[in-house]
Length: 178
Image (cartoon, rainbow, N blue to C red; front, side, top):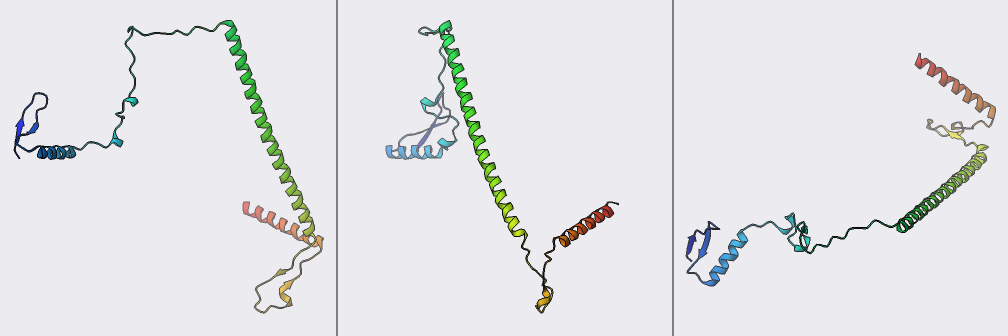
């Protein structure tokens, strides 16, 4: 296969295949086109499709341009528009009000449910207030009757013990501060 380098005015380095079979010319063209690394379509910034291109504005004062100027509305039309917009605003306010009422109803229902659960919990606490379980001491290796201590049913003793604990905590807090 012979090659001849020609210098053309618009393209300085062009290779022309002369004296080769058309099949060899086709293979050579295919080879050089594959070697020429074009970026993939995904990497292009602008689509090459004609419908994706921006339209250009016609030249100012060009013939055939029909400029339609917008006429100001008449008094009747402006009154109709004003009343229409007022009606739309009222509808929007009514929708907002109904939405707020709906949220308020949901909130009231939730608060009522919480109050109901609170009442049930208080009733259960009243029922269980009279019953105090026995406490076990697990330090002894031999379980016997000594390891189970009955809890006092006397309310006055419990109140006195709580007061003593409160005084102890206050005294300890005062000594820690000073």
